[in-house]
Length: 353
Picture: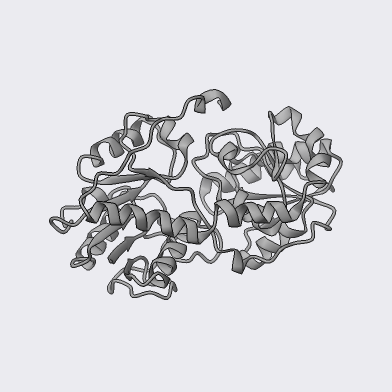
C-alpha cells in the first residue's frame, strides 16, 4: 500500500518531549514502512521521522496549539502533498473536511480527544465519507451513535524503553499541568502513603502556567520534587526507578499513553478507574484502580506486584507491532471495498463515571 499519514502542525514527529499523538504517528509511520509499505508523511518540517515526507510544510509552532488558522493551512498543504496514495490516515480534526481530498481515495481518521457534544458533532459529520478509528471503548461510549470502524488501542516500541528496578524509593507523576490529570490528587496521595513524589509535567500554555503558579506551587513541600518537562530517556528513568506511577486522573481520558509507558518500564500504575484506565491496567496484576480517597492504601500492594508482568502486559497488549497490524488490517478491508465490522458499545462502560 501507499499510505499518506497526516499529523497536526504544532509538534514535530517524533516529539522532543511532550506529544502523545505525535509519538503514536511516529510508531505508525516506522511500522508501516517496516512492513513493506510506502509511507508519505505530512508533518511539520522540523520532524525527524525517517520516512519520506511532504515537502513545503511549515515548522512546528507549539505556541499555536489548537488554533484554527494554523491547522487549516497545514491540512491544505498536507492533502495537496499526499495526492497519489492508496489510502490516507489523518490525525487532525479538520482534515476530513479538506476540499483537496483525492477523489476515490479512502480517508481514515483517528479520534484522539474526548467526544464532547461539540466534538461528536464534528465526527458525526465526518463519518459520512471518512472511516473513524477510536482509541478506546470508553471513548466510543460518549457518542455511541458515531459509526466507529475499529477501536485500536495505542502501542509503543518496547525496544526503546529500558526496564527499571523500582528501587528509587519514590512515587512519580507524569502528565500535563492541569486539574484533569490529577497532579493535586497525586500530591495528596503520596503524602498519605508517606512516600516522596517526583512530578514531571508539561507546562507551556498559559492555563498550565497559571495552574502551577496559583495552585500547585504553593502546595509543594519537602515531600515533593518538581522536575519540569523531560525527554524520553529521563522520563523512562524516572518511571523505571519509581515504586509506582500515580495516575489519579479526574476526567474520562480517551487513552493514557503514560500508563503503558510506565508499565513498559516495569512500574505498576495506581490510579482512578476513569476513562480508558480499566482497559489498560489489569487490577491486581499491573496496578490498582480505585476511587481517589482509597488509593493511598493500595500503594504498598502495588509495590509488591511483579514488575516483569507489568512489562509483559505491554508486549502482549500494547506493542507498536500490534497497533500497526490492527491499522493495516483495517486499511486492507477498506481498499478491498469491504465494510468495516463496526464497534458495538460495550455494556457497563459508564459505571466508572
